[in-house]
Amino acid sequence: MMDETHTSFPRLLGTALLILLLVGIGAVIGATLWPRVVTVEQRVTAPIRRDIGAQGFAERLPDLVEATCPAIVQVNGLLPTPSVANLPKGHKAKRAMPPPPPITNGFFVSDDGYVLAMAPGAHPQGPISVQMPDGSNAEAELRASDPATGLVLLKVDGKGLTTLDFSDEDFPRIGASGLIPFVAPGQRCAIQTGIVAADYLVDHAHNAGTIRATPALDPVLVGAPLIDSDGDVFGIAMPADGKRGTPYLPGNVAARVVSQMLRSGSPTRALGIVPDDLTPVLARRLATDRQRGAVISWVVPGSAADKAGLHAADIVLAVNGAPISGASELSRTLDGARGTIPLTILRDGQQIAMTLSGPDQ
Image 1: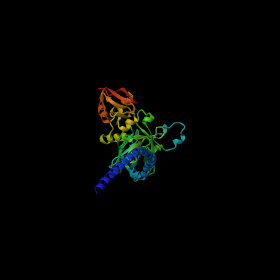
Image 2: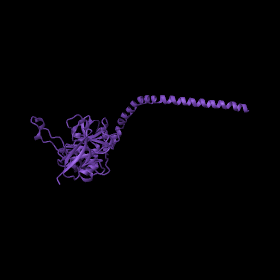
Image 3: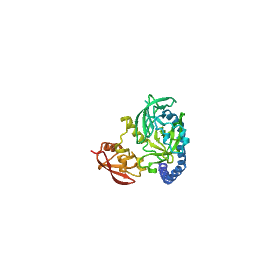
Image 4: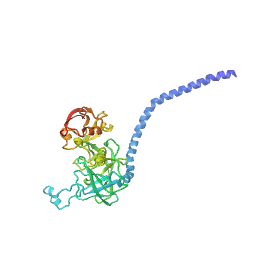
């Protein structure tokens, strides 16, 4: 009995050592081969994931249409109507035609009847009416307008209306797809899709921080929102400017303007600047690793900022030598500023000293 115990122990020890050796060899082989397996898997599955992602937006379109169309309206009586007398000579055929209707698209931003529309230089051409989502017409009152961006805020009687929210995304990405719900003259809500093809950094726009989407919209669809896959607004169609595609006011800029119009009735324009926070997305687009500062997203033509030579995409780092952390601090600092105002900005990776001329003391 004693001999059997002594004999079996070495065998068990040897077996255990052999198992440990095999496990170690397996671990070494696995560590060597696993990265290759993962790489192959990524190569095989990446196109599949891209296809699924692309299909995801298309598959969501019916739900997005159902969710957003009840918020889309058409505004009549707001845009200036061209005068036939001002048409160029030789346009006799045009003289016999009635002028185009002063219309624009819009959408509800509050469930009690506030409508946001796009109407640069707008002033009422008689009564303003809104074609509601159910096809009925409602009288509207012009509550606020922003000459810089062209946004207008209207009010109709309503309660429990469907509204659209602005996207939380920092800045629209080139290549992003969007749904464009609109109301054409004499029609109910219809849709088109668009793709962000460029932004103001690509277009080298000096004053306006716009994005551009293709295909181009019909001019009567100005004001139509560009909707992301979550059903939020990340752009608002602006009038055509002669370039390819349709320019859109980014949703983050529109959200800031709407907040000011709802709060105070008119946007504040400290020396002609519409600022934005330097978010990680904007920082990457501007090729900077800065984490503090305010990005100029809009410069009002003819303003003090325009005369000083400030451009959209400039990053304001300091005012009077004091660092600027974001858009709100820049607005507070410039609001009410007088006399000569030194600025430190970052443009194309280079720090530049500039001077703003505020109102005299």
